[in-house]
Length: 197
Image (cartoon, rainbow, N blue to C red; front, side, top):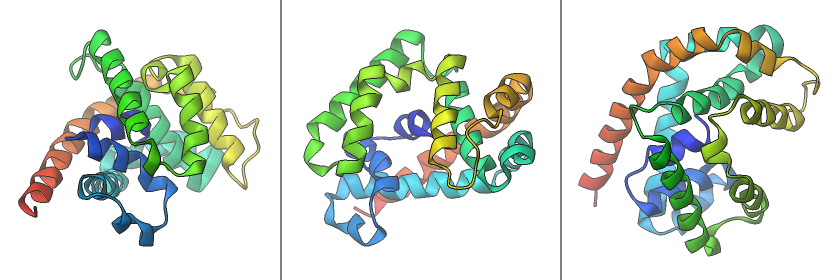
């Protein structure tokens, strides 16, 4: 899953921070953070593991695999944020906007914990309101181009966004089959984390 989904699948402000940090820190550094941030890191990993093993995600990867092979999962992650952002059964538009602003506020309040490489990206994320704007085709295209630019072995002109647009109905079905399961899984992981306190 991508940034919006990870930020939504949290149960405390500290977990929000941990969810964002996980991809930007070394494993050995995870225990240097406060307990609630560590919970977010653990939750992020549990979400990723569950996502990678879900049958609907395996189906969704088939949309991108012919174009990008092993990078298909990265483009599915970005695609899922589009469907999360447009899922009005989870939040209204006003609530999604409030969620985005809350996440930025929490990250700014915990700025001391943010690695430099994340701080650079976060400035753009907040200024351009990535979390709220994932609902737009144009912004998902922008995110997919970012993935292409970061990937070592992919050409930047691969038509992944066109594949997303062409297969949007199918990807929506994959999301519908997948996300309720992920939500329940995240709740279960959080419950276990609270028992460990």
